[in-house]
Image 1 (cartoon, helix red, strand yellow):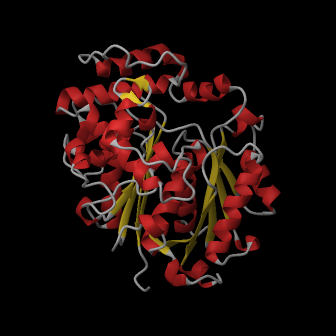
Image 2 (cartoon, one colour):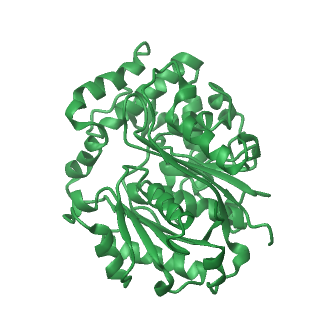
Length: 416
């Protein structure tokens, strides 16, 4: 395998950008990544653009990637549009990594963006209804909601306001974990409190307000046991990463010592399984492949960014990655093990719950955070001594889990 580096990263602030269209957000993220790498636009040889709502909400159903890249000034290179639900940005990154591994180029660009805050909120929420097999939508919902059977929501804990159907699904995941492992609503709230506290020090985060566990529990309900601060918001934003081989890195004007090595990159679908087989989950399979590719294990990781569209996502995913034993994620977060300063900080960026979740940009936003951390450039949220980091990003739903999972492992440059 060829050595692949992340030479530069860039992202917009995630949040509401009423005065910027999606192309302005893309340009901002790409220009920041190029500047970070010491690269010129004409040095880019290959590009992938991850997006979900560009067509549905803004009318550009076909070729949004080629149009976005041409607007930037990229010409005569391969350009691909990638859609993999919430894992679209990570999938664009993986394809760029594959292009470098295949020898198709030495410098590749991965971009992700979505502008989701639009006047028609119902149309924006409708995007999520396409995140599973639409021909079996009712059966999908029934199967997933059934996971929460056995724990009845207390009175007043279900919102009467409209929200994505996925919130009911995430709530069912919560209740399944509560029934199987004794996880408590307070432990789930502790994830949200931790991540919102982390985000205070992230200038690119959509929300920068700290919450206590008690404040999270007292917040407006969404679907039991989830309250509003436990759930990712609707967001606008873009993120980009410039990847290169050793040869490509030598051609850039940036400091090569700031480059971060990609030790593993995996994107895959899962398999048919039951809820009694967590060891066969899509994220667990992807993690095992990533660890094997990197020649590392979960015990080697110093921090992680994982997909927490709700706080429960973090608890499920740290277990799937082997960072916490099965069923023990709730107590681990309650003890502070997953906080900055703890045994293994998770989502130091603030996570999707607080940093924001512009679907196509989300995975590359995670990459941005890990690159900054491994360089030692994360400021007040810096994880001290971080050398190895893991990213997990899921998208869509098939069966009882995500339709696609991406897991990537990154390593700090040997020389600083």
